[in-house]
Length: 136
Image (cartoon, rainbow, N blue to C red):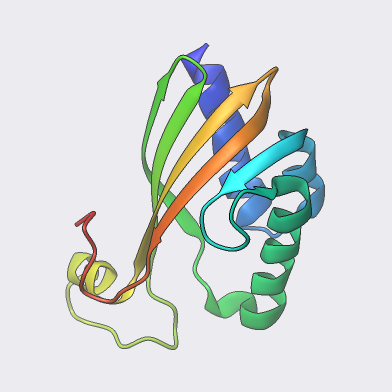
């Protein structure tokens, strides 16, 4: 079971959010899914998340690096995912790639509740402060 619910979240992040593919995003969200986190708090996820993904894609295009899943843990119906973004071409670089991510990248902690094979709730905590990541 944990492999199945982790696969839902992995597809949501990699094929949905990273590709700004609203069709994939909507297929993985329950019709009454709720989002708790940045953006309109406690918003209906099917309204907010596809709009946010499209806005990021239109505004930043190829400049915004994809989310890279660093860790995933599943227990019961919950999946906790730690994902990071690397450095975009617009940001300064360093000789050390790990140091570069910590200084200029961002990290996101997702918690998803899966119900009947779809995301029923999403909690998001983002850390975009260069060099201050608590997730180093």
